[in-house]
Length: 82
Image (cartoon, rainbow, N blue to C red):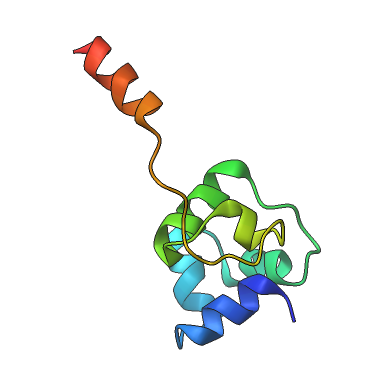
């Protein structure tokens, strides 16, 4: 089973629910689940954040569902821009 479908069903959600959250059509999201379409990086970030997991988990690079610790690099960049 596709990992996106698995995690979506584990959360008792429909494709149309996730499509709305990531701002795509249900058809587009269905293609992500069937691996008929590559998922843009920003969309992967949204999905990983929503499911509280890592992009690596969504892409089968790990079986560890727990997200990685947050990076401090982005926080430091934001502080320096203020």
